[in-house]
Length: 342
Picture 1 (tube, rainbow, N blue to C red):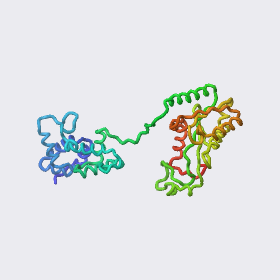
Picture 2 (cartoon, rainbow, N blue to C red):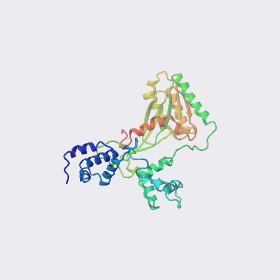
Picture 3 (cartoon, rainbow, N blue to C red):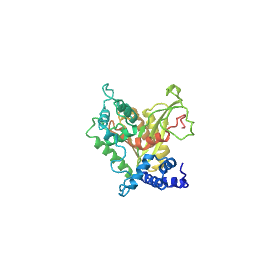
Picture 4 (cartoon, rainbow, N blue to C red):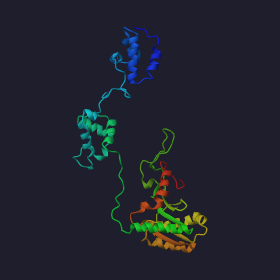
């Protein structure tokens, strides 16, 4: 075997070269060592003899080395799978266009369209392809993973826009006079106990919070009903947690607690109160008890209370939904609500 005294230096230089440069460098060294040089460089570097011989031929040519800014000459390298097999794109598009859920004639159901499953389905049709290539091809075809978009609101009153403008104007008027205006609503009822809460939280590896397998009400210590009052002008929220039912009396009591604990301090000159609420539920516009309890609150506090209701089917536009309740859900994600204090 031919001894190469500076083998480590050759390997060191080789690590810094690209594919073409490495081929030429190894070929040059093999030429320098003469007979047996190809075999010696093959054993030292692991580069195939065919590649070294190819490099020698390229060095012997009169033309300059390289292809401009390219490492390989134009047309070199593996061809894209869609170039070798044009039918594969059509097969993939056919699968992706199967949009009818539950259609027994569809190739794949919409719930199964992962890249891995698409690759397996194409392999059944005689197209060998990886899930990574599927991902790239779907992008090229103009597809992306998308969730459902809630945009269809159905029929609604022609005056709905005017109603929203009226509510907005009312809040502006109260703010200009230095009077409080709040957005109120009840959040989803929560079971109190060791129940799974959606989301994740940081914990030591292998030490997840252990909770009940089933969310049976019989396993709960009770129910928590968060009722919130949000002040858009000050961007402040207040939550009162009920333990029985979401009634109109509870809703008004929550507003009273906001006024006693927060409102009076924030608005010492407050003589009026604007309340924005959904048109249904415990604070619905048809709820007689809601009106009765509000009158009692007005008499007790001396406040002149004005109530504006959002149009039907527009509760998601209630400011409290995305300015207070969303942050409550973010705050307790992955944390079981084991007690009312939590």
